Image 1: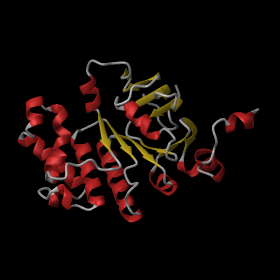
Image 2: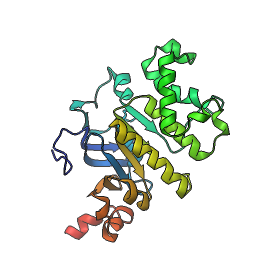
Image 3: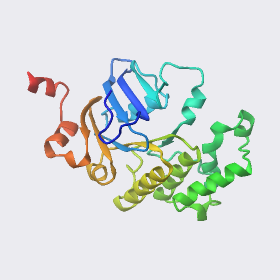
Image 4: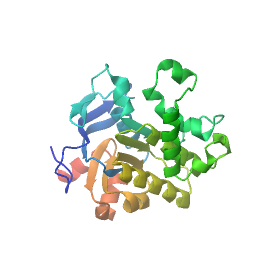
Length: 264
């Protein structure tokens, strides 16, 4: 098992031989192997259709892989049905489309990150104790949105909504944040602000982050390490400084089987 350079500790996440084939024979993942160090900000870089979203959904158990295993802090989390709620509680999600409840306040949206810790009846009526409200306000302050805690979510700009979504993930107090194209719909200035908030909060709290991106410039600017994916396979793993034109061609323009032909 390879551990990223400079990290002599057990990986926070270990993805081993992960494959996923959907109905109809569409292979989204092909023998993916990735280790992620505790507290690392890892960017998974690749075009649409590379398998990035499927990978994150396998990690948080929204999708069951066809083969392979995933370990979190040394414990296997794939193939388990019992304790699934507790497993998912460890993984906060940040989506491209924000997924806020527009008619609810900013604060209530962030509080939904605490639902995994509450009973079903409390979840149904959005009933939260004061301790949860304090956590939510602290998380909003981390992304400079606490002053809008009582506004409706649908009054916010796109960048503000994504900052609220990050606060919601932080309120879950996860060990890992999975961010799936979190800035795809934002302009460059706002995108950089959102990625900065995500990286800073994760660093300060020691949270491991897997962030799917297709924009090379953001990967170079924010990633501690980059995993490049193409057609469901890992085709690059290394520092953002190593993203040469040849590597980028391999990530974005490689055809299925191209590397095999070159090696032959």
